[in-house]
Amino acid sequence: MELIFLIAYIAHMLAILGILGLLLSQVRKSPRKLSPGILHSSALALIAGLVMVGTYANAKPDETLDHTKVGVKLIILLIIMAISYINIKKNELSKNIWLTLLGLTVSNILTAALWR
Image (cartoon, rainbow, N blue to C red; front, top):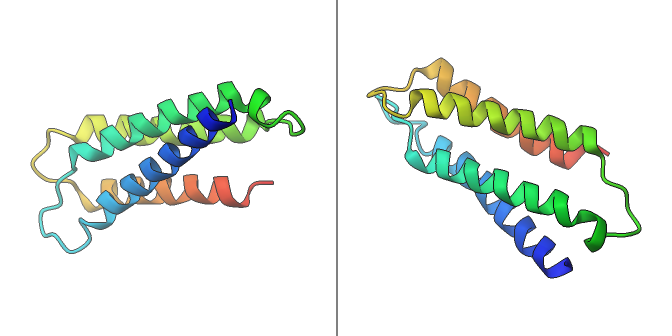
């Protein structure tokens, strides 16, 4: 179970970094367009996160899982997915939507890193 947890953890980190990278690649573009990779990366992050939660008790028997932290991260990720799904077909991504997605992604990263 530890190996499955580790693989899911690495996939989760790469997916979140993928969302951040794809959003940051639109910084200097004049009409910003939402990349479909953001939806794919967020789906991978969701699946990997669920696998990590499911295998946590067996992979780390000495630690307890903070379900509140997991719930907050899940809500943030679902909001990112919903906003991305709504705006995926649009020709232009407004600056406010782009900043919202970027802020949610950064807040998800900070929640994971700083919440103890």
